[in-house]
Image (spheres, rainbow, N blue to C red):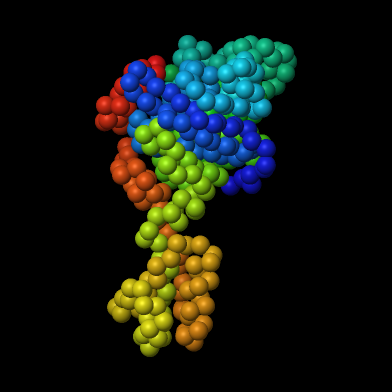
Length: 333
């Protein structure tokens, strides 16, 4: 993961949005450091897409202050558009043009010099492994190729902030991991990534920080590790090869679960360094040494369930089931 610099690429204060009587965003605050990968998670209908639509200037907010790349969203949306790129789960690729022509169209839309644009297109085709498909139309492309072309088109304008709205939905695991590597490379180059996804593994793998949105409010925010430590159920597993040492260790931990058959002792822990040090200190005080130590923490599925009261969606391509989600989609088109 990338190391967060101090400058903020995106700041959001008290952002609000309603569609009629439906409150979609109820005063959210965000601060995304430049050059990092920030992931916004939430159940279907939580307001993720609406947030991206507002931050990318597609729809107005009802209230709140947003600054992107140093520009005020409400006062200077044109400057904001000049520093951002947007790639959604639904491709913006033109099927009547070849891959190369799609990229050259973006060169023209960004008013780039043709020679400079030609060089950039060649570089992007190479970077995204699309050289062999450059002269064919996207009708012949796989889903992963279309998604890569869509992202390459976004990069023609050299945006410093990129909004990726569920960019890997529907891709096979291998292609998804290829996209992950591309996203990591962009962040390493200093590009700020604002990612919405329903793949919790994706957020865990990529994000420097995660915010969990539910019913229009941010209910938790932190690094993946910090979020996991918020949820009960973490423990340190101590394994022994000698039953006598297991018994001695068990006597030192009143709240531990002892498994005589597996010769293990499970000690409740939040997975933090201080908690782990306390376990080791108690072992030392008892004069016992474990043969193996493993730290177990809840995963993001557990966090999602505990904080939203709902399990994470099993199928990210499934349609929302909540009436609020349906209404949000309908009204935000």
